[in-house]
Length: 265
Image (tube, rainbow, N blue to C red; front, side, top):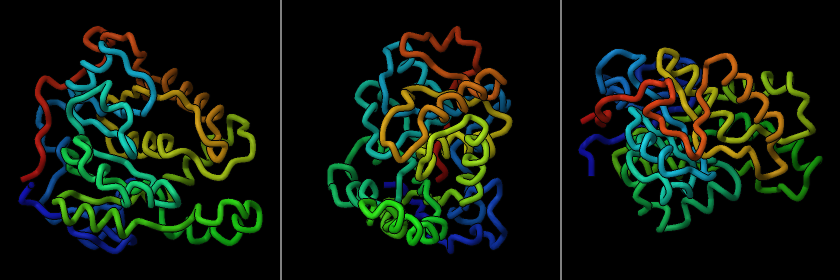
């Protein structure tokens, strides 16, 4: 177990008392740095790899293992296909998914969860508390959609020496605004993947950001068709690289770190 322990903070401020930077609320101690910040080397020689739970081929998996910083999601279903480093596990900290993860000892013991140095709670608790009333009227079947399990993930992070972060509502609302340009059908919230993509682009503006294992399919609560077009536009603008399952990342035109990042000690 790492000697460093997370400090659970009020969701309205960073650990140093300042407002959150770029919409990500910090919960690390003063003086601590993220693994990516400490890995050294020119910024553009590092890649933030966001790994979804869709198909990942062997060549792409090898590239993921060599990335400087790897973000996975929830129960990390694609991990058997793309083993290797995990720096962050981004979780849906509300509703049934959040409750299910916290309730399963197997989730807590998962190798990716175990190895991650950070847990990101993707859903802003205050925003979801405000959504509860209107959603209960429009979608009574989603009575537990806004149930907040953030404290459970914060406690798990503290127990296991991980940093816990809450992604602020400003990122969620930024994604909503961006998706409006792609004519989404009525939806409840953006997917965790879309929110984390926006967070990574804000938080690591000088690093290459790549996606693997994103199929843009799933619950009708999310506007996946619009999210696909949103991501395609970011790829076309050169802000993201979408990794195909049979892609050899060594020749993909994105810079992968020559050595892995190390967790803060």
